[in-house]
Image 1 (spheres, rainbow, N blue to C red):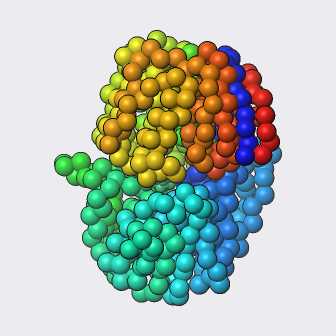
Image 2 (tube, rainbow, N blue to C red; image 1 turned 45 degrees about the horizontal axis):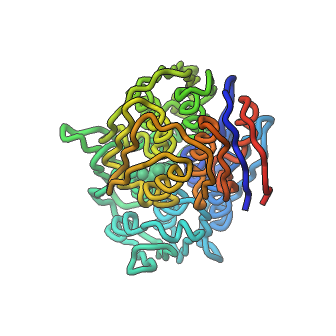
Length: 439
Ligand code: S3P
């Protein structure tokens, strides 16, 4: 296990973050459905994206990727896909597993998908139910609820599916199955979620119809069809940028992150920081593969406090752990509701966050669907176990940067899931790090 110690310091300067993880998965998955060679660039060199690439190779795709000058992955992907000869190992990646379920449901044959111990504890019923309605046979462990998942792929029919959760993974799974179904497929979700699949489908010549009803529900309809080749360039990951923005806003110094995907469904963290009282800059610099790209920046500010819920929580779902650190350093604290989904992420992120921040002296009150952290609590030194969760490991590191004494983190290798160069970037910004055990 990798063990590191992060010391309190100021941070300042510019940094680039890895390619967006959600977009990297989709670049490979949709690229493999085109049937011709699709050039891809800017993909995250992360464990999760490697899992999608490897699963696609198992399904017969050619996926050639190599690092560019900045360490991101570029190369080509080419389908077609067919039944694999072995289990598709999705590692730690829920997005790989759930989106692949939608892809393989339309491919004749038997498909078995599994992953690491964390992924095998995460729910799959949410994708099994609609895929069965579309005509696929789907079995899973634990009475149909947990991986491994077995999908018998073949002919599918279009459906109207009302998802009980606002999940981009569920929506994308059903849309990808719908691409190969007979007739249109509609997904209705209680709230809008990230729309990367929809934007990339349009970029590849197959637009979907999307809108938000008066009741706030999101309705997306796809017609079956084929995709056209087009190069896919992926911008930086706002979920990775979030660590630097929180550190800066909570007092570490001025930080700028360039080339970040600025899709509004991903900038909940910027809105949340602004609600807390921070000044966060966002300057659009261009467009890539149908996604806006921006420079994001933040500087120390006096943070008041905030209450978050509803749509903003969906848009900030992966950033809610690190936002707790900003909440603790604010005057009145941070309250988060409507976030029961945190319980079924790479870990139970409400319980693990409470234990991680508890270890550095910050009390987090757990709620069934969120948390409350009181203000005026500066992290102190301590030892945090990452619990195999990349975002908890990096949240603890930011607590170390902002605290009164060093924070030691065990299981830091988890950061490779999304941000392998996190420590190097922390040092580039002026952070002080000791690697106690390289693991
Ligand atoms: C993702 C969607 C979100 C998010 C995850 C990535 C995606 O999950 O938490 O990290 O790429 O579609 P849900 O769809 O389960 O909310």
